Length: 196
Image 1: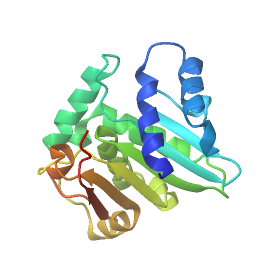
Image 2: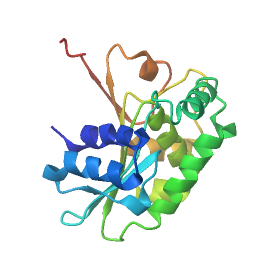
Image 3: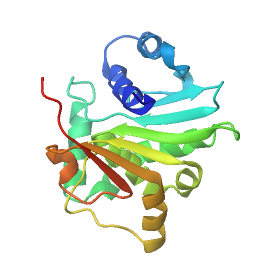
């Protein structure tokens, strides 16, 4: 199994109760077999910064919609704005884009950098790539899992679209309506839903 889905899943721990240190410790316990660690002073409830100093890899992970209550209202507002094609007016989208742009500047020069995301986080990460040139220039890939999409989102300039098509890898389950609603950049891998 690849590392990206595991890291995307860990972001949801950040909306649990308890101290930041407790939440980071739980994440690091879950991923200790990978060589990656979540960096406390570069992570918050929305974005987790993962680093593997041995392989010189960094992942910046955008969390999907919170349903626990901590950030539910802000996340659902962001979801709705995106679904209506109004994300450029969303405080949450702008906040995540700015935070990611600042984090990119802290990544060691010799590290490979990727974004990873799930659902709403896929939309905020793609928004970040489209609107923050320093992120687009530094990130090798964005691994998006069932990213939120909308029929009302429009592509940007041809130049940005070409850049995005080289970066974004969308992974979606075939019946996921959240990621099926609109057009995605880059490569799309569609998987059958596992039956339980």
